[in-house]
Length: 106
Image 1 (cartoon, rainbow, N blue to C red):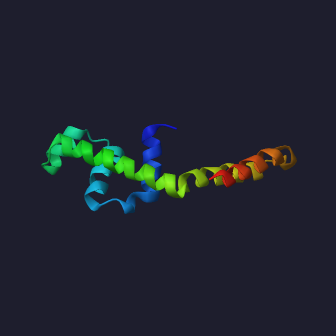
Image 2: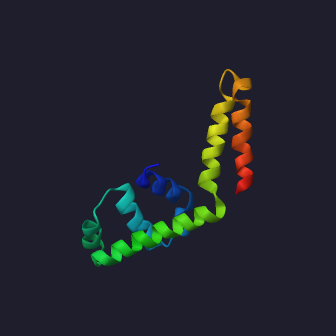
C-alpha cells in the first residue's frame, strides 16, 4: 500500500488521538499536499519543527495500529465481505477460512 494512502487511512481511524497542532500539520501535509516549507511559513515555525511534527504523528499512528490492529481488521473484513459477495461461495470457502484464521494471530 502506498505510504500516503496508508497514513491517510490511519489518520481517518486514529487522527483524533493526535494533538490539535499535530492534526493541523498532518492534514496540511497529507490531505492538502502542502510542502514542509509552505506549512512552516503558514504556521510561522521552523521547517524542522514541521518535519518533527509529521514524523511524530506518523510514529504515533503506526503505534496505535500496532496495538489495536483496527486498519488491518477493517481490511480483512472488507476482503471477507467481498468473498461472501461472490457468486460461487463454495469455491471461496477455504480462502475465507484462512483469512479469518489469520485474525487469531493478532
